Length: 189
Image (cartoon, rainbow, N blue to C red; front, top):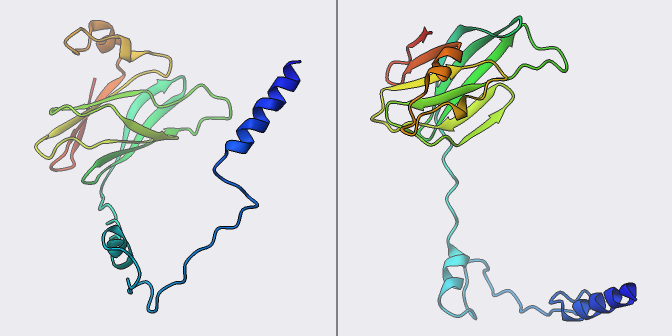
């Protein structure tokens, strides 16, 4: 019974579809000199579409600051090395690696918090040990990166004013302070 009802619903839906594969759609002839001729086209959007070409997007220009700093031991036997921080007009790219390289199935991954003296959104895109963040505004001077063990949940350790609590500070392995103007970096506890 349910099968027959389902088949009937699908049959009715198929009859209402806009796309009809066996129906032929005729098109008009292209005017002489296409795509620049607009002989039989009505004025409006057709004129622009025939003559305008979208500009190619400009590639982002990146400034890379090589650091190669040892943050410390983030998991048993694994040290986190900050390779570089790169800046573009819109993004900040954080590149890191583990030493030694984690074995297959090792419970080691990058666990860090990022902020700046002029706050930015926490939207990011991560791939492996490289993370791309929204760049702080041009007026910002410093960016801070706090590092934690992989199993520590730092997001739940903030006061309502978004200041870190004592547990956050106690579990922080280290803090990297990055000068956005000069590219200098400093590691603190």
